Length: 255
Image (cartoon, rainbow, N blue to C red; front, side, top):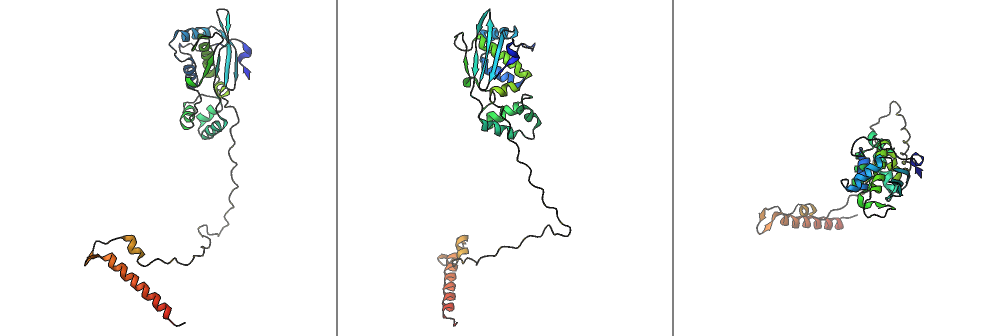
């Protein structure tokens, strides 16, 4: 568990009207607030910019804080199920060799590519959809109140400066599995050895006898008529006769 800024009010640094500029921050603000054109969202932006959000706590699966709204303290919370460790490990492995995604896995930057990999390949988006969030506030108002919006906007602004905050909330902080150590170096080739020389061939078993006219049967009819029959049928009977004659001669041959 960590309390941001030792519980002091969070300062929203962006001067733009829209809070949350990077892809993770923007997705989080949109998911947590929902309708950003509502009066509650506008009131939430005012509260966030005025320093009304403080005592913000980040733990795996839970974001919470306190919001001072005209001298009354409210306690909004945003919950989401953590990313399963196996999915985070797999997504982290897929980032190897891509500097931009590796930086995102380490929490140093926001990456659309990492979000895409997790959402499309693993069906576990890094930023949960609105329907996957559990949002509550002590004010008891239904839907997304101004206090939840204020907490979301203050956190979105902080994610722009500290992307690892989102990973901490989603439980994506376990060390990535280490790559397998490289195999031992191959033995050096001694001068004079023939690298193209293969080993001994395996012993072949006895040939498998084929039934008479096996090739003819595999080829099928020839389309050539010999009387009322196809040439293949005539040759098949001839092959059978030759085979029977061969067996008969072998049986009468003196030892």
